[in-house]
Amino acid sequence: MKKALFAVAAVALLAASVQAGEIKTHTWPCTFTPIQIATIPVKMDVGYWVAIENQGDLVINMAQESIHVYSGCTNISVKCNVAVTLSCSITPTGDVPGDYSCSITSPNIPFGGGTTQVCARLENANLSGVPGGTTGKQVASVKISVVPTS
Image 1 (tube, rainbow, N blue to C red):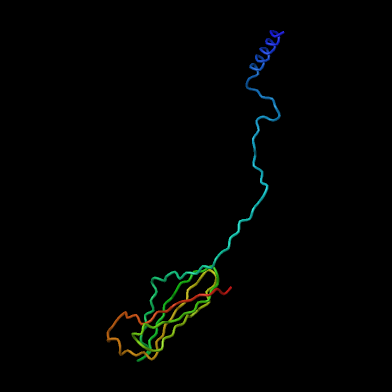
Image 2 (cartoon, rainbow, N blue to C red):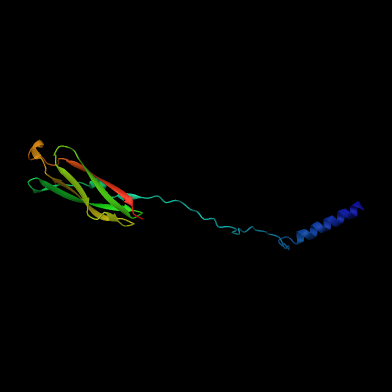
């Protein structure tokens, strides 16, 4: 009986080798295909961003309007991701006493940015402390401030 069982097994193996290269099944081969089951939103908080592009090149050179009045302006280019309102303040160095003021031509800058003009003015200038013929003398600093408007 053991010999008969062995012979049946040998015939089965021989039959399987004859059918080599052919597979008949309902589950082979199997590939796993990804199936989307969820979409997750990705969110972030966007902060406010404002930059004066040409800041390193900015200088206000004042020229004499009358005997004791000087004024000058410079253009600034602003980039921003929010509409902003600019303001200015001026701080004299003390070398030329007088009444200093500053202004911004178009202080409201829209989303994305724009260009505006910053001006400085000196009235009642007391020139007695600076030698005549001095050039490029810094007499004040203008500070630009910004606040979002939307």
